[in-house]
Image 1 (cartoon, helix red, strand yellow):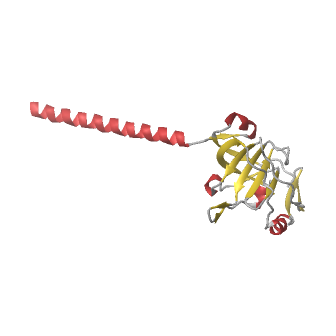
Image 2 (image 1 turned 90 degrees about the horizontal axis):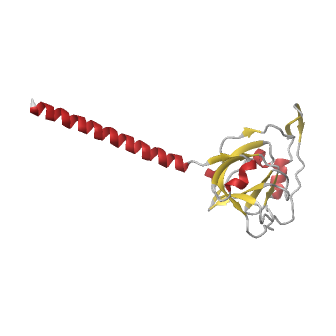
Image 3 (image 1 turned 120 degrees about the vertical axis):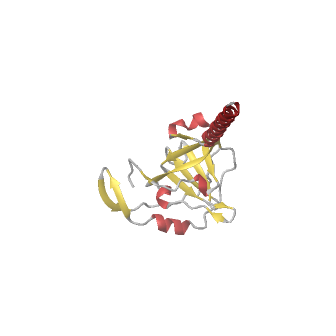
Length: 191
């Protein structure tokens, strides 16, 4: 009888230890997973998340395309924009892809990165692909204006002045993984 009780006791201790280990592993996993997630914020929250990694969904109000970067301006057109996304065109030899509808503000996507106050040099480089980009953008597309459907196009005029973002809130994107894959419709748009 004593041996039987001892075997049961060992079994219960083993089950308690096993359960405790499972709970411990799940707790550590959930803490690691929770710390790996970023906050999803709105455009108005940008100043509160300075120097923090966040995810933000926004519509392009204006954009620039230069030799090495795309600049997406949100809130207003450049130079009065509230927030800018700087997307490096290349990650090593691999080109980062961005949909034209996102550039011109017809669709929105999520971006993930750290919000900083920019303090780099103005970008005065020219875009060697500007004619190709202009031809892609200046194509007749379906538009919605005041709830009415129509066909129309945007007359894109490339900017030639240097892009100077010193002192402005920006997020720098240098990897395709920082750009969401799913596009979302824009609620109010003239496009």
